[in-house]
Image 1 (cartoon, rainbow, N blue to C red):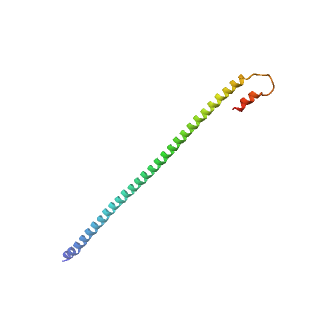
Image 2: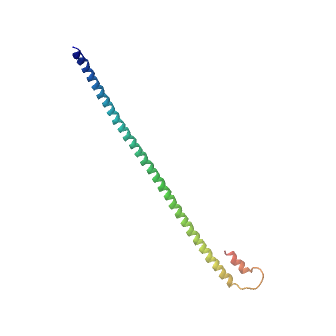
Image 3: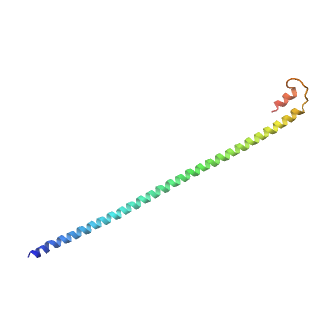
Length: 122
């Protein structure tokens, strides 16, 4: 009688323990799946953030390169204009020296009227 009583009591306990173990395993497996989904979502968010900031950095670098190129063009244009002005001034100075040399030298002190007129043409 006692073994039959133990069998009656043990069978539901074994079934209950098996159900608790199955529920525990199911919960553990569900938690692992959820953790995997969270990790995937986190990795996706990080990838999106990195892609966004990489694009922003590339835009900024492109704008900086454009400003550098524009400034370089402006500088080169200013240099060319300055070179042209210097060349014109040098040519004018050579011309003035020739015209000055062509004027007669009277041996007088100071500047003569012709040389003053020459200087005023500058």
